[in-house]
Structures are given as structure tokens and as C-alpha cells.
Image 1 (tube, one colour):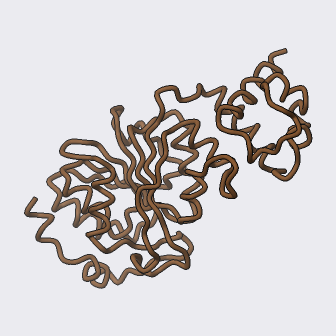
Image 2 (cartoon, helix red, strand yellow):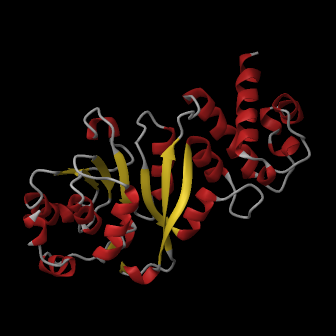
Image 3 (spheres, rainbow, N blue to C red):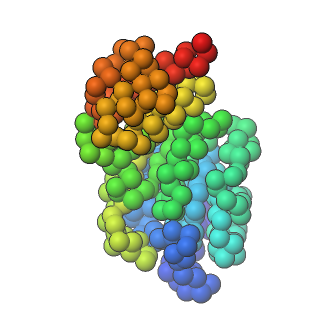
Length: 278
């Protein structure tokens, strides 16, 4: 580990490479190693574990993950960071691989070399939600996800039925994974500080994760239901079957989407599949 210990502070490394965060990429750097090390601990990764990290930027979280002994594949869209991250790779005894690509289009199965992998990331603000949906519903299932989001997004992921934050994101996330908000991060922890606070969510995929067809139907149902969340289900789901769909799912058609739990939405998704099969 001596190679990592000999690296200069991140602020010095950024200055040496004349690098600043790009607003267009939603970049906010985590340079405090106390915070990044806490995230690595929360991720519960250790020696030999394979980790996929998206948006490493200057590599603050990457350093903390490497300190655990993990093997890290970092996916970075901004090529400006390639020289800096290559320096980190040189100090990491071959345990860091860098992929310059858009994380929305990469194949995580290839990144994980066909084996299990956790995803740990301080996600760029502008792609956090679509990346989460990709990892929850796509072909690749990570062993776990430990992800930094804007706090408002984090609260939407873990929100219970009946709360103001409960919506489509909560239903899909909680149908696919056990979710917990495990850490808050104030804006001042970042460089440059964003206008909002952030939080880390830990997601552990469920053993009974819905099958692909059911997930597709779940996305269709939740989009319709929460697209008109002030309306009763009979109205918001009218194009999908309305009252008849609710009856098959065992739900009252005069309730609103925000009051329906995950199991209720899965029942609606199953009813939609059955209806389309008729």
C-alpha cells in the first residue's frame, strides 16, 4: 500500500494538472479522505473484491476504495482526468483499471469480467437517477450499490408510501433492492460546493427481484400512476385498463398512487401483463 500512501494530497494533484470541475458534467469533487474512507467502509468491500466506480474525477473515492484492497474499475467520461487517474493506477499495484466512456452505455458485465462486482460511486448529479434505474433493472445485477446522490433524490429512493417524496423512483428501487440512507454529506464537503446537500444510499439487490417482464410492466404502471399523482388510479391508469386493472390487482380504484405500497404496484404490473396476454 506504500504507493498509495506516497501520493500527494488531492488538491495538490488537481492544481498540478490545472483541473477544475465542469458544471456541464455535474461534477462536484469529494477531496476529504475522511469522508471517502467512510463511504468505502459503508460499501463493505475488502481485499480482492471487484468494484465498479462511476465518475471518479480526481480519484478521492477511488483512493479510499483501493486502500481497502479492492480491485477497482473506474468509468470516467471526462478525458481530462485520464493522466491523473493513470498516476493513481501506477501506485495501486495493478488494482485500478480506467475506462474512458459514458457509464450510461457501458456493459457492466464486461467491466466486472463476468464475475460479481459492487458499484460504489459519488454519482454525477445529472445522471444519477438514470444510472440507478439502469443498475436496478438491467441485465447486470451488482452485489450491492453504495451511491452518493443529491439528498432530495436519496430521500425519494427510500421514501415510504404516503410521504411527499414517495413516487416512481421509490417503487422501482424498493421492488428491486433493500434500500437504506446511510450517510449525509453537507454541501461544504465538496469542491466546488453544490447548492444542495447530498446523501449516501446503500442498496442490496433482492433475491426475489422481479423478472424482466414484470419490471418492464412496473415501469409502465408507475409512469402512468405517478404522472398524474393527484388523480385516482381509475383515472391515472385509464389508458392501461383503469378500474378493471385495479380490480384484477385487488386494489380500490378510487385511491391515489402515493398511498399504494410496492406490493400493490407489483400486483398492478402483473395484472397489466395478464391483460395484454388476453
